[in-house]
Amino acid sequence: MQKPEKYSWLKSIVAEALGLSQDRAQRLLESRSTRILKYRGITYMTIRRDIGDHYEGTVILYSNKTGEYRVVEGYPHIPRVLLLSRAVPRHFIDNVIVEEKMDGHNVRVVRFDGEIYAITRGGYICPYTTARMRRKYGRNLEKIFDNLGDDAVVAGEVVGMENPYTRYYYPEAPEWDYFVFDIFEGPLEFLSVENRRSIVEEAGMRNVRLLGIVPKESWEEIASIVRGLETLGREGIVMKDPHYRVDPLKYTTSYINARDIMEGMKYPFDEGHTFIFSRVLRQMFKAVEEGWDESRLRMEAHRIGEAILIPAVESLKAHIRGEPVAEQFTLTFYNKEELDEYIVYMYSLGVLITLVSLEELSDGRIRATFVKHKKTEDQFKRIMRTGLSPLD
Ligand code: ATP
Ligand code: MG
Image 1 (cartoon, helix red, strand yellow):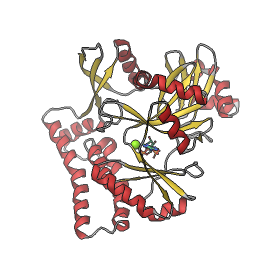
Image 2: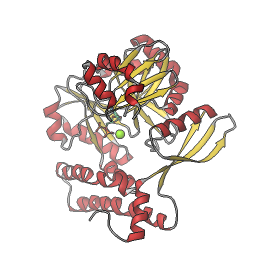
Image 3: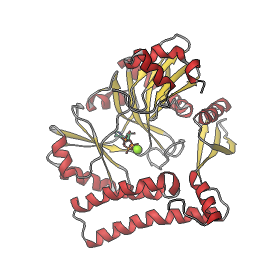
Image 4: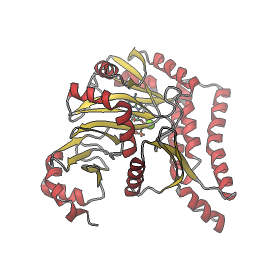
């Protein structure tokens, strides 16, 4: 590995930025817990696990132009509720703000060195997301950073069908959009929900939906909000203290618990198998809290069973027919350079993608379709050849 010698100049920066000794910073730099990448005029180091007070996904950005650096804290994990009736009254202080949980991918936006950057949950500057963010919300974000200063971090969910990470159709955002759910400053000081919502609105950007403000004893009211989302096939909620005096909590619908399994089990040897137990657990506690009767229990059991087996068998049959077992997605680029930048980025992350088609739109934009290789395909191949189980 060439990392240590090549980037030893980063050692003092890392030590200062994270409050570590020089030795510890050096070891960190040499370890697999960090990664160093470049994006245009920025060199950045991503932290791939929690280190001290810094969460996974924390990034140190360094300007090659000015020599300045800054830390962008990782977005904290949100604990999950299994029983609203237990968790909500115990956890919160007085009122609970209920916001919609949207199913896309987490993006932190910062302004550094005069430019807007979009950072993924894992702590990578995604060139594609950055390009779309700058074009759609560049001016609005400038307004927010002018107002709050460059120390601020805007956090939100990118949803829609045109992103490389998580694609679900949202009628309010069919292609690509960004819904803000937090703004924090420095070492994770969150703006109050009310303040954040009004700043986002005034800047002409979108907030995630506010679904209610409920006293903590009224967990049944929250359950009824979730029932409403259930019938619409939406993901769930994030419950927040108005002033972040305690951590937010998340809770999801039965619909999404089953759909996650169904999506995952298209690729059982990739994410699929790890999804199953966690979703079964969520459903177990819903069954008792919501007092499912025999017929509801059977219906849900049936739904989970189908979600496990049907997509897996369909993928296997497709493989036998000679079709690829791979994820396909289409992205829109504004020009050829942005397309190249994205391909180089994926390559530098070691993610195997193949460009399968290109289409130039009448406005000059480029629609590119990619497939992403899945481990499941290799496993299917091996099993079809040997007839043996890779598990036992
Ligand atoms: P973790 O368990 O570490 O939080 P995860 O990837 O398993 O991460 P999810 O189950 O999707 O996460 O739940 C947390 C994520 O939900 C957040 O990181 C954020 O991207 C997303 N999210 C969507 N809507 C909201 C919202 N209104 N408030 C906060 N987060 C939201
Ligand atoms: Mg999510």
